[in-house]
Image (cartoon, rainbow, N blue to C red; front, side, top):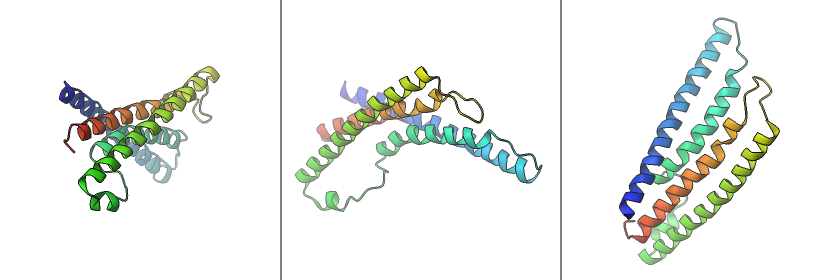
Length: 161
């Protein structure tokens, strides 16, 4: 049962990373198109920067959990790598629980931000884009990161880390 839950969390994380990668590709195409339109055809487009920023926000939040899954976040691990096994286990436990706490705070405030955005019907200035679609990246990304922290914790508790 536990392995199945870990597998599901990994699949959600990988799917989010693929979507984030697609958003990064779309963002690259939009920025490339904007550069060509501005400098080759002398016809700048006004919406490209805004959409590229929104896609980047989503790509970062969706890719963060995959980065955690792969242990690829930047960090100073000299203390953990030199520590005895039991101390290393305790430090990793603290790391995962602290990450889970921080992501739960981010999820809570992200939901508040989305609710306020909906209530205010906030829209972007340049292209009148509904900002709720961008702001949703915060709670969605925080939730997927929480799942991955739980996954890491379960692996540690089961002795697979």
